[in-house]
Length: 185
Image (cartoon, rainbow, N blue to C red; front, side, top):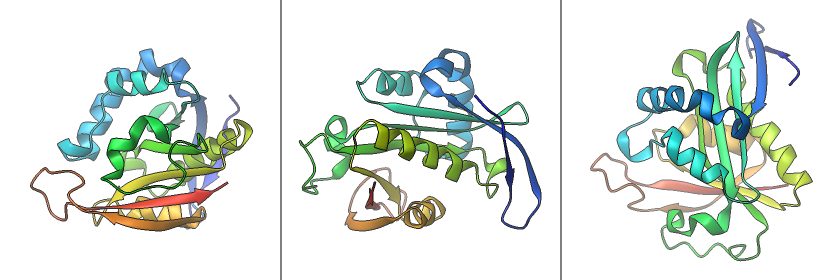
């Protein structure tokens, strides 16, 4: 775990960022993850520390946690696409069943620490690990409007939108759709 100094896009010092393996840290930060999720998302998109612990138990799952100046700044959890077919909303991903795709379940950055490169650092670390583990792709879904910033990050990492999933959350908040994207590794 080597600290990395990040520079914000505007050239301002973002602080010292330390990335760690979430499966090692999960017991220590599960309650903090619950707080982070509650502060960041509407109920339909929240994951719990307990739920993410279960995802991390899936073989070939990858989880990262970021600390900025000693404070929990963000998390990112991904696992094989085959474990999340229900999230595709009926979209027939042609890679489903081939065990070639890492599915991003959750990437959350503390709202007070956004726009510092933390989400990018988490994703880049996971994409690198995914390549080493033999994945060919990474995919996920981003809620239309409410997650446009994360969609922009995924596109900047080489992602392309494959489809728009209607009725993705069924929580009465509109828009109730998500963009499903894929990044070629």
